[in-house]
Length: 443
Ligand code: S3P
Image (cartoon, rainbow, N blue to C red):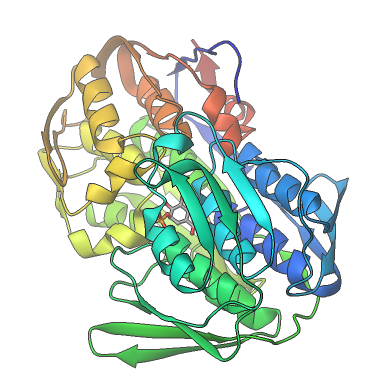
């Protein structure tokens, strides 16, 4: 929820340099809170992202009886109530801007005998929920949504739920996770079939908490199965740095001449690192140093040096592993040489904003040539020359749009004014101090 819009302009007078750490991974932070709340006993989470989206998840779980206490920066203790043990909340649950909170909690609550009302901000209230409503109804949940399968919606769960096999119609880690979470309190096996691999943090973390999870190849994809009824054991979880947040300082360092930046402790799960693979295909100088495992997730430090980028055709099959990174990839493409063709990404139209249309409008306003197609965007790069800029761009309640245009401003002749930077607090509250620490200037 934001009050008055907060405009933001970033500029660079010289190279960016320094060592930084980005905040904890948003997807993993949500899941760490949710699974800890269902364990029997106390879990500790360190490196938790304290952005508005994750705080919405924490508040919802607290309203349902889980003990959730912040000990220090990023360090949280969670007293779980056991699978099936959540209590009826007294008020509607405000999900703010967070699609992940909404969809995953709908799944989690679907196998509890609770009546829960979900509300959200204007952006979230436009987003499609039918993709979770359909399978959760088959599991026994009674759901009344607003027209078009949107928020506000009211859900009455069934305890225990009915186990199902769900073949995902769209590649979505949120829908996969919602069904698996509901399956924790269903007798026997609940299976999700996915045709394209999406982020697998839920599967990894469920196994870490002691749930029985299997992943098996099936014709044309894989079947992920959770067995209901297991008791989850509390854990200590260390949340790695968010590769989706690291993307902003990384692209900033690539496009501001002479820059060299080290981003420490970035999660590079292969279901999430698509942007870094695509940037390498474009000729980016990004070295992975000190590769290691943190909390069961692959992590490395990224050393990023500025240099020329070459436009490419981005293979559509990479999309699920970088679905949140296209806005900042569009910015990299704007500074590359030649055309960058990005197709097969129609899912971007149902994110916090229509990210294809919003980015196309802002890029054009800043003097970047681009062609919007139904399933993507084709950007004609400026061959390393700065973009003209000199425009105010609309962030449309979308944190990643706001940060992408703030980064574009670093390589613009005239200021790029982001009309409202307040949404950045949903995922990256310290974006501004981090960028100014690297040498960017608030313009
Ligand atoms: C997320 C999955 C993705 C992603 C979102 C976080 C998750 O959404 O865009 O930011 O944590 O599972 P979809 O499942 O809709 O692709």
